[in-house]
Image (tube, rainbow, N blue to C red; front, side, top):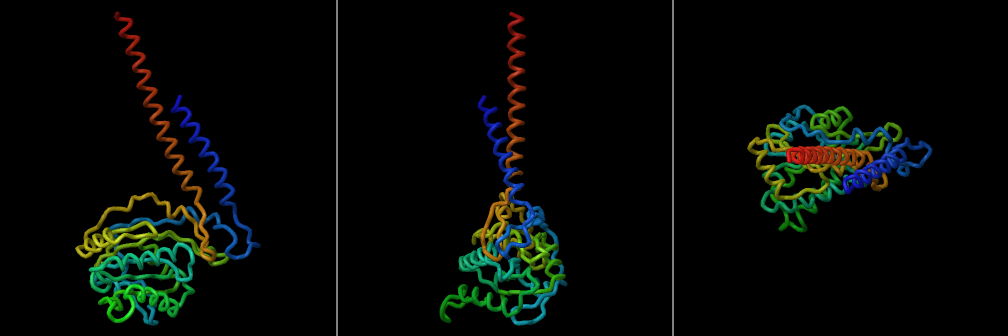
Length: 297
């Protein structure tokens, strides 16, 4: 009886969620002001990070750094492990959260400095952004990372922190290379994307992913040391609820991706049904055995 009630409850929840998703993902009106409409229907199913562990990042992706110089992934990713972050600088949503948490991360790695143990490479996924904007954003991070005054400077930071911009071909090439699936609305060029940090070895081998918008120092340091030794880590199997959050890059407002909840509810329903079937089978067998014993008596 309790099991039946639980199943009914999950079924009702799933039905309500499906109904909500139909309302949530209806195509937005193009008459709405930019930043006021919801994420278009095509976006949610495509936004994810495919964890391509042991894949090699091509050395030929070409970008422009914060100084306006042309650089390639081969030039940047060859001496030390790399923390690779793909965002865009004007984003006021999850990008801002990621950048703030990356600051906290590298600040918290007290004995392991950028430019010594690792490089930080931040790549804009918006081809309209400029080297000047990358330079300004990089300086914000450096000021926070180094601290105030010369006494607070951390060795290697200038050579170990890179902010890049690029054209659509190279941005999409690198994103596809590392499994970073984002969506650009062709109607207004708004970008929606997942959150995550990719660890790349000196031989440009992808060794680890952190699928989150917040990052902890200890596991990151361990991942960087493994990457230095070309050791490939395991997948990040945490529930992918960050990709369940749609962020309006113009307003920073977040809304829940109902479809992932539908999937979760569906899995829960299947598990409950499986448990119920097993329980019923056991009960039936028990009844049959009881009748058999009674017949023998």
